[in-house]
Image 1 (cartoon, helix red, strand yellow):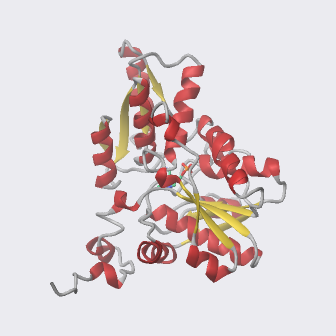
Image 2: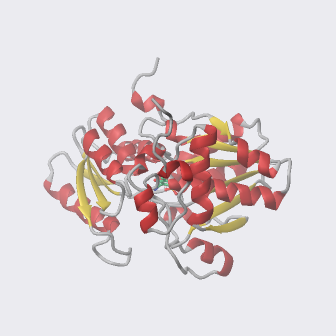
Length: 338
Ligand code: PMP
């Protein structure tokens, strides 16, 4: 029996991805982060950020946690906050999926939607959340903190302490490579630090969507972004504190046209319904498998569950507006005679 929902965070299984493994001759394993109580990898960051603030004496009972988030961190923070007696105020760009906004409201977060503008704009969601936290810290009697997932390394520490340890134990130390996309960089840099401490030559790869600047940074030294992606929660344009001191061994830029068919096939062929960032992750794992050759064990992250994107990624009308490939089964009405 678990003491509370918080104890259900982490210790997620590794699931063998059959087709990716068969096609590459490697073992490609997905860390099933969608099985966390908030249904994403960001529960870990939420837990470690709140526990770190408590250790520093920054949170009091009834206190408020403010955060700017594409949604999943807000969900993770709110699950943990509710279990511990805190409140959350979540600032989200209005471009994020309705399902994530609904989940946040359902969980009891106070949700503030803002127009999606670039980071350099003072009205960017991250900056709005920082200012709001300062205001609330002054005016709210119970106190307020800014979770600041991008530049708060409690996020990365959580992955060093838990995700990397779990991957090492679950593979009996036989992990040859790890790949993931970056939102804050907490997952990629944290797992890289944790695994490299155990095995110096483990290969770490970043899978970057179009519209992000990190692939360009790690291959040419310049932060440059081109194109766009419908994936959510990933695609970074700067070196966050969580990424400081980190460098990958390999960098891949993955177009949506490569990532999304993987997600669609997983639903139909392997019973796994996952979000778009996971498609970028698995495409990256396949590229690393081809780079290293058959016989290697490569781990990536199944970052969140697909129902979170039913109105977008799994909606043929939405895909059509983006000129993205639509699998036959998605556009088909039931053809079984009744
Ligand atoms: N995938 C999804 C669906 C996410 O919400 C996030 C976090 N924003 C990530 C991947 C990236 O994780 P991280 O912030 O640890 O880089």
